[in-house]
Image (tube, rainbow, N blue to C red):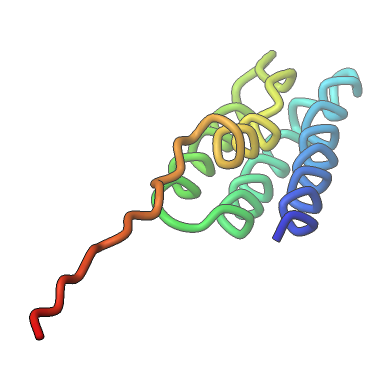
Length: 100
C-alpha cells in the first residue's frame, strides 16, 4: 500500500509538470491547454475514485483551461489532501458481553 501511495505521488508530479510545460511554449501553449485539460481531468478520476476524485477532476479541468493557473500543482495537492491532510476514521472496537 505504501509503495502504491508513492507511485501515485510520482505520477501526479509528472502530470503536474506536463500541465505546467504548456505554459512555457509561447503562442501554442494556450491551445495545448485546450487539449490537455480533458486528459488531465480523466486522469484525475482514474487516480482518485469516488466523489472526491470527481470534484478534483473538475478542479484540474478548470485549472488547466483557465489562463495563468497552470502553476497550481493540482495532482500533488490532491495527493496531499488524500494521504496527509484528510483525517482518516479511527477503527472502533465493539465490546461484546456474553452472559453464560
